[in-house]
Length: 105
Image (cartoon, rainbow, N blue to C red):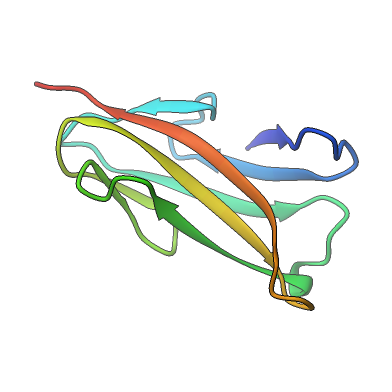
């Protein structure tokens, strides 16, 4: 897995990884590829205290499902976000962006 440190909150680290084991700030994804992003949890949080979802800034470029499966649709750039929500107050606690580039053939 790859650890992402959230700026200003160094005690909590979001544990993410990909099926490629590459660095996690950006990914280049060809049109015929698929990749899964795995969310392992957050250090110092109990898993039952939060829920999460994935979203894409440009679903026409890259589509992401609730399990973190990325599917390229068209060439371009998009940001994929992991949004962690505290169950107590239903407020987003962390939003983790990742840039995805789908190159032309």
